[in-house]
Image (cartoon, rainbow, N blue to C red; front, side):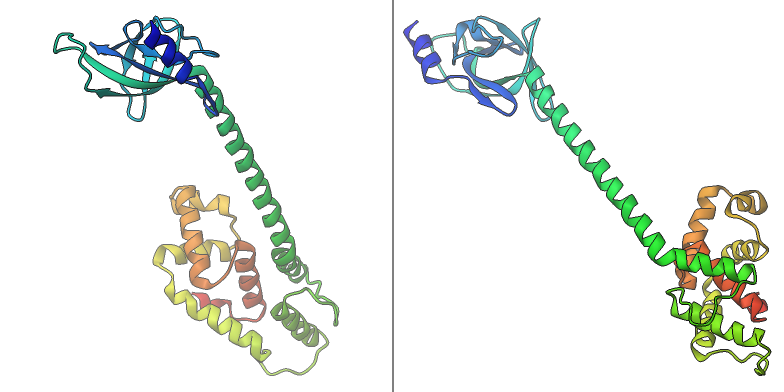
Length: 269
């Protein structure tokens, strides 16, 4: 009795982020921890009264200890203690935490991670929206103007130097200035030459996908036309963009449209 009181006073329940932890030194038999025959630290703030028999359920990282009405999680370690019992009796030192307290803690951690992940996702969406407006939007706007025969006025910048230079060239041609057949600004000619040369890197399947885009088909049309899945189309698209040195389908279509207007589209075939 004195030992039980001494241990209860010396080992109070320790409050932590997982709940109140209780220490126990008790016999262990047939996967049961016999608290009633051992010494248990203070159980203040827990469901234990020190007189339970806990059924042990072994786990990979921790064990579960079942009283029949309440469950605890924790770990135990057998230790050599002899009090004259039969040789089959072993003792164990255990640390126990209420399972509901641990579950509440892990749920809070999961909520924190979910909120953090959602915040990161929103941040990435905002960044992609900004980048799209900053870099892709000028390309798509310029493409629409070229498709509608609405060339930017001289001095009006789209933010893309190559596009602006080509617009100036097309404006000059529209004003009936005499330019030799095939003459292009040096930067534009070099840009087109590199783009056309990279077509040789494409596989036969990727060239077929490119031809569908040249013919004016949308991405949604490709699976039925090529008899492949949409995931395969996306895989081919990523490879085409990487090999041709473009960042998106909009940029790819801009090159195709400009090559068509400059009479060089057949070089892609």
